[in-house]
Structure formats: C-alpha cells, structure tokens
Length: 473
Image (cartoon, rainbow, N blue to C red; front, side, top):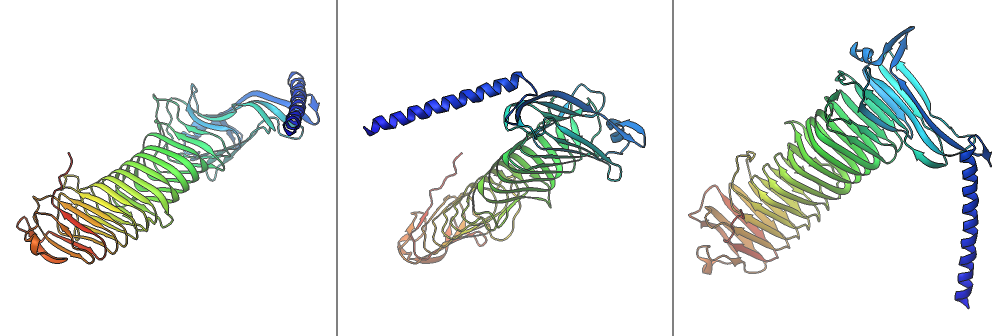
C-alpha cells in the first residue's frame, strides 16, 4: 500500500514539473520571438555588436594607439572587464586596437544591463590607456561569446609597454599565432574567481609576470625569459613549460597542482614554493629551490636538480628527487625523503619520516661542495643509504628506527658504527667480523682512508651493513 502511495506522489510531482517546464518554455518562446516584450519583468536580450577602438584624442588632436606607443606616450595598457573573455591576438589590422565584441543571448530582468558598457580613459601623466568593459547581465544565458581583444598588427614594438588585465571569471588568452612574436615589458593578470589564464608560445615579457587567480587553470607554453615570475592562487591547476628567471620565481597557493617542465634561475636568484598543501612536479630545475614555512602536506617531486634545494621546514611533505647534482638541505617532521641518485652533498633530517638515498660517483654536472658529504638523521624513522661513492665525512643516525647501509665493496673508507639494542648484521667483507661487537671505530674498508669516513649510529633499532651495492645502469 505504501509503495502505491509513493508512486502516486511521484507521478503527480512529475506532472506538475512537466506543466511548469512547459509554461517556462512557452514564456521563453514568446520572449525570443518578440524582442522587447516583457513577461513578469523579464525580457529576451541579445547582441551581435562589435566596436573597434584604435584612436585617442588628446588636446583636440587624434592619434592612433600605435603612434602613441611608438612615441612613448603609452607605457601601460589596462583591460578591465567583468564577464568578457580577454584575448591578445595578432589580427589583420594596421594599428593596435581594442576590439569589443558584445555577442550573447539570454533572459534578463528589466532593470539589468542589456548591452556592454565601455569606458575609455587615457592618463597622460601615467601614460596609461584603460578600457573598462562591463558586460550584459543575464539571469539565464543561452549563449555568450563576448570578448575584448587587444588586436595587434604584424609588427609593433611593445617592449616598453606594461599589460594589465582584470577579470571576474573569464578566460585570458595571450597569443594566437606561430608566425609573429610580441614582447611586452610586464604582465599583471588579476582574476577574482576561477578562470583560464593561458600564455601561448609567441608572447614574451622582458621584466615581470604576476598572475593572481583564485582557482581555475594557468597554462604557459614556449619559453619565458624575464626577471621575476609570480603566481598567487588558492586552488588552481598550473602547467608551465619553461621559465627562465634572473631573479625570482614565486608560487603561492593554498592547495594547487603544479607541473613544470623546466626552470632556470640565475645565480643569486631562487624559486620559492609557498603552499600549505598540493602537488608540485618539476622535470628539471637549475638554480636554488626553497619552500616557505607554510608548506605542510605537499608532495614535492623533482626530476633533475642542478641547484641547491633548501627545504628547512617541509613538515609532513613527501619529497622525491630523481637526480640531484647540487647540495640538498631538507628537514621534515613525518614526511618521507627519497633521492634516487645523488651526485652531490645531501643533508636530511626528519622526526619520523623515512629517508632513502643512493649516492653516486661524481659527475661533470655535480656542484662543488665542502664539509659533510652526507648527513642523514631521523628520530624514529627508517633509513636506507646506498653508497656507490663515499667522500669526506658521512653520518647516518636514528634514535628508534632501523638502518640499512649498503656500500660498493670497491670503495676505500673508514667505517665506524654503534648499535645500542641488538648486534648489527655485518657484511662478510668487513674485516674481523667475528670479533666485532655493537660498537667499532675506524674499520678500514678497502685499505681505509683518513679523509673519507662513514659513521653509523643506531640507538634502539636494527642495524644492517652490507657490501653488495652496485649502481643500476
């Protein structure tokens, strides 16, 4: 009986919904086929208008935007829009211009804006040309392909022009050609909500780029060679191809996914990762890489590192490095650290994280180093250290975790170890193995060395020392 009543209620709800939807379709049809008509204060709005702005009037004298740029009277172009997509495109034009395409259809209330409101301003003092476009307001969009286009001729010198773009939740696309290159001085993009910001191959900037976007996507193609590059976002997908910075590359986010193909930072500059969480993946980085104290549960993945890695407070972040050619200083709480091939100095400490490092023979790419070659320490985590190269002082220690050290038996160094809780498991190749106990100093491996040393200390866990390591080819 209950099932029958339930089905009956659903049937009547379906009928009511169908009637309401049918009435809505009838009203919409009347409005669409009777432009200007209103029903309950709602009307159908549409536009195919297009306006091209390419001139500025100064003291009753009209000049083209191109001429003002060439004369150094325009040093900054500002595009300010709410719901219009913004493009910087090469077009078949003679002069630089701003094209406003107001192309949309939808239902709007009587008091809402039906067409775009465009305001042009030129400030001679600051040499700033500003176009502000407020788009139409609709309660229901049928279509909206409205956009503002900074239209560029085949050739124009923009190297002294700053570009600023402000949007709400619209697309910002810079560059549309493989044949013509355009170089601005700097770029500032500010998106209040989610947006797609895309820098295509033939757009370049000589000074700075700053992109602020709450979320959405930020994409860069080609190569950018400039002074500073900065991205600020809450939760965005960031994909960058190649960034060359003489000063600083700065990524600020709450929880974003970052994928970078290649980064080059000049000596004296650095790349800073400032995020509470998220994932950052870099195929290749040259120059210093560091993280801020805000980094907490990030996943940091680096393919090849040719500059110092300074991560003093990575907290619970997991860090993976495939090939390390420069010094790494890493400290985490419970985060794990794994370096598949280290050709240079490694200093890692954790509270409870696991440490795994493989040390390789020097490479021509290796950065020069002084002091300790390696220092691996954790309070309660495990350590796996593989040595195909031992230079200078090397320390491996834990208070409560387990340690496994495996070295190439062709190496020459002095081995010292301490194992507090249990007898260590020692390799057959260690001299006088039968007489050794829980603590020994300066055991000569391969005739020993007064300079190259390996010191191992394990207070409570298991210690295993093997001489069977061979670097995989």
